[in-house]
Length: 296
Image (cartoon, rainbow, N blue to C red; front, side):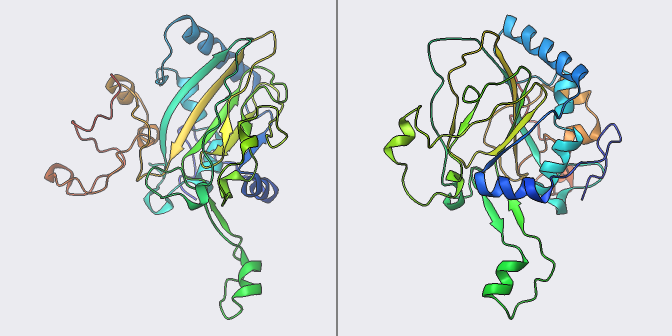
């Protein structure tokens, strides 16, 4: 899959079959201890500095934050789950980075419990909040015996995809919560979804440097942070190249100092520009001045 290397020359690391099976089943996945200690320390300090200033959804002034979207594990995840490979190359990713922001949540008596999302398998494909999948060979063998799909392993597409990096230890139930399988739910939500203490909710515990991957098609929520130290997490959101849900992006100055591959993370969402300057069709790094792409 393309690209074969990130801006640092590192190759992607792909999910195992077991990880993909669990992701398809549950709609979310925890991968422990992805980031090295030095990177955890650097980003944690950056987020503490952000906390001291204003909340912002644009953190692309940090090379370490930007590297999170080029990390080999992230490349492997997004190449398989989100990328339009026909629009990817060695100089361009086949997916977009919608936004990146940090959460700095201290111990409190109030809860961030606000369930949202779900049933994305049946959602209209207009914003990216949709989950889709193509079954593997076994399905076709059992139900479509005349078709030849021998060796086909199936394919997942998580649409608008969130990857959360945790930079402090997370106790079970105090991070992000999920209703496992709700990305494929066919029925309206039951009343227990509104109950923070219902056993319908799943969560995780993890060490610093771990990541949580989920499709925005799943029902999920924040929770009450109960530890004596703050929750420090970076939330990155990715989308297919033809959709844009969040109005955010780098400043022009930030964009110009990026590598060619990094710039492609912020490609325009349309294809034909009707502007002769770009030969009609846009490449991954072509810009349109009135697009509203750059942050203000």
